[in-house]
Amino acid sequence: MRCAKNIAGLIFIVFIATAALFFKLTVSAYSHAESTPFDEYQVKAAFLYNFTKFVEWPAGALGAKISICTLGDDQFGGYLDLLNGKVVDGRPLVVRRNVDLESANSCHVLFVCPGGYRVSDVLQKTGNHPVLTVGETKSFTAAGGIISFVVRENRVQFEINADAARRAGLKISSQLMKLARPRESR
Image 1 (cartoon, rainbow, N blue to C red):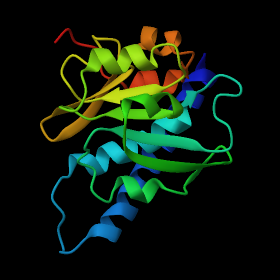
Image 2: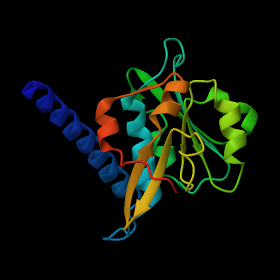
Image 3: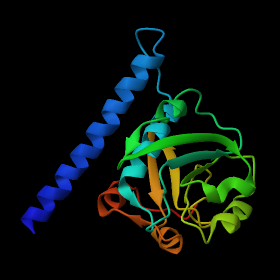
């Protein structure tokens, strides 16, 4: 039991260190002044990157590359583009922005931008496919999305719908589950 706690703690530290390093790189790449204000989409881009490290797709689902897509007009600016070419488990990440609903199933991570498509239509389209759906609307996980970002007091957090992940054939690591905030009925 003690060994398991030590391993979980180590994995948590690695996750946080990776996120901190990514933040430092993006801040230095986009810093135009000495101080950079909080940018939630910089943080969300780092989370999307880290999600790819802590989610297991079914055998054969990934292929040679991991696609991170946005559905609709996103607010990521250049932060998401910094993920292009980064390597996770020997596979380079490819960012595809503003994909249409018909292309959503070819994505491994699909960020559903608010205001573009109805969440129910998106989830119906991706429901039987191994797509990690990520959103930021209040009822995203309640509607069947897998991960939803929540911003509270300038902190980006996330909720996970484990049942939706299982239905999509995805395995989310226990370490990532521990970092998630409890789901709310919103």
